[in-house]
Image (cartoon, rainbow, N blue to C red; front, side, top):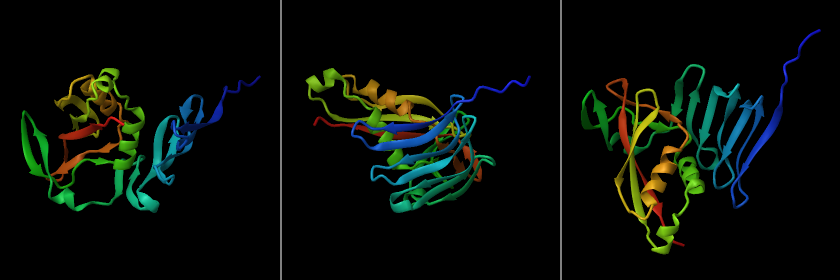
Length: 206
């Protein structure tokens, strides 16, 4: 007799508390498989690509408003095919780690979050919870988290560099460190290098 592997295939749908569809895709044998889509706050496709056995494969597209192409990346060849740069890329100074030293410099290309700022902020917004003691104190303001994007696009060394107290610092650190790794490393002098970046998290009492 022939043994047929047990296979399950089902669709996945992530919906926000407001009822907006955030993500659609499918699983096979409990691993992401086939086409997946992420949607922005206007309901447009922001990210699309395919998984095979839980890993991203082939070319993925990343879009802004009205299907504006922000990035295209090939996960088979680990190649950035296209990036829509902005003026700030060539005027902003970044903290680049060189051995035991850190230098402030303008880069050939700063680190890129492939999914774009809106998806990053969407993930922050839907995962952020106001600590009860901060609500009771009506505490609000900005917490800044610093972290390193290494030469392979992985993140590490998360630190709170601007504090608010009332549990807001720990909440900001938790949500920033839980952002899915979707980075292309920064380039300086033609080489990928570790870069320290800062991400502000704003808390506001409604």
